[in-house]
Image 1 (cartoon, rainbow, N blue to C red):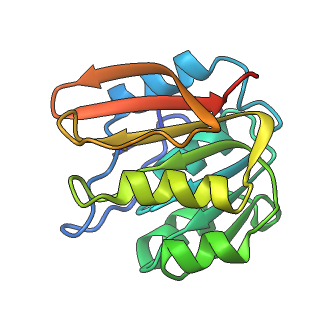
Image 2: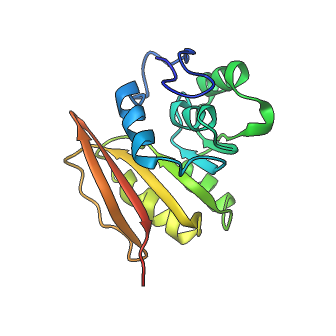
Length: 178
C-alpha cells in the first residue's frame, strides 16, 4: 500500500497481514478530492488509525499535525518513523473511548475514523466526538463504514456527503447550522 498524494506520494506503508482493513488508495484519493483544501494546515485526528494511512496522507498533503488513536500501534509507529517528522504526529495508544475523553475540548479541523464494520462503532465514535467537543466549528468528520451499517447522526451534526465504493461507504459530517 502506498501514499497517493503530496510530499510522501508513492512511498509505501507497512500494513499488518490481518486485524485491520486499510483504506484503499482510490478511496483515499476520493476523500481528499472531496475535502479540497480543508486539510491544508489542519489539526487532524485519525481514530482507529491502523497503519496511519489517512493521517499520514493528510500530513503528506499539507496538514500541520495529526494525533493518531490506535490501540495496537506497531505498524503505525514504523510508518510514522520513516515518513513523518516527529513534530507532526502523536500516537495515543489506547481504546478510542479513553483516547477521545483524554482529548476533550481539543479542536480538530479534520477527524478521520475507520472503525471495524458493523459493530456500532460509527455511532459510538460520532457520539464521543460530540460529547467531548472535538470538532472545530468549521471542521469535518470523515467516517469509513459499511454501506449497510445503520446509525443515528447526533443532533449537533449533519451529514453533508456520502460516497460508496464497493463494500465501503464514506460519510462526511459538519456542525449543523442553526
